[in-house]
Image (cartoon, rainbow, N blue to C red; front, side, top):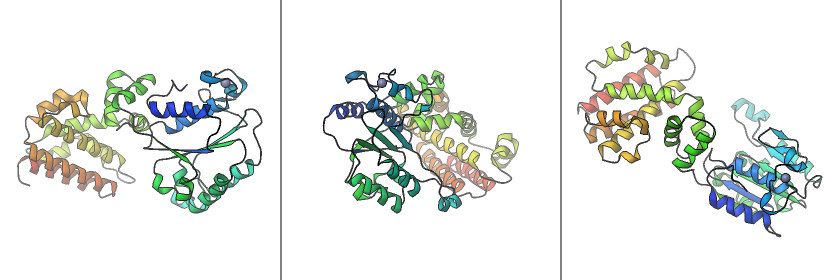
Length: 347
Ligand SMILES: [Zn+2]
């Protein structure tokens, strides 16, 4: 039923059984890390749930319901399907964050007085439901306590602890775990990402396809390659001359604005130093930057394990400093001097 979606076998089996039950609760909560397919599966379930077909064949893909709710073509005109993403409200506008707002929940409540018109049920998906504030959550609670006839709700969240206990008591919780490296890679291949890149992104993204795709958009590979070149340079005879001589460092030091480029570069440096530790400890199968294994083996030969460990710590501190928006040039100077000093055993 959910062949298009990679991974989550247990949850898919649960949803298939769930759909065929006569008596079922009115609300599910899908929770787990970001970017692993919770929302995708919720949407596919909605499509199957509303489909006019029977049994295994849902979603059939050709009934009126399936045609009106087709995520592949971007058609969501189904009258019995409601979907909410976090939005901006006036208060949040200043903070530039998005939440599920109380006005969204009120609009849902207004619509809840109507029954289905095309399918046997109505289904409502609330994405990032854990962004609701107290007011929105209390309004939703009233709806979940007395769910309107034929209505069904799916709440999606990364953190269960941010939801009110009273809401949690009204839903069946379905836990989602990260995808495996193989599953992430397969999902990337399905999106026509070239094999070598898919392999690397899958290793770097911690079982989150969303993260892997973001990495791809952010050209994370460019940063990784810069970081690989950087890490290979140690020990440096003259760190300051080296820093001044490499053009790509000047790109990372913004005259104004954020230092996202520096953060990406330093994060990749941490990931490579961490990999060097795995290589050094005879665990090459744990390496994230799998495509760079021969180079990593070469670099690891130059280092002592405990010094690598210290260098990794220094790079992690540099990431934290960059996130705190410390001065980019001093973060970069400092981490370079510190890694060099670690190598030389001066720290
Ligand atoms: Zn159908």
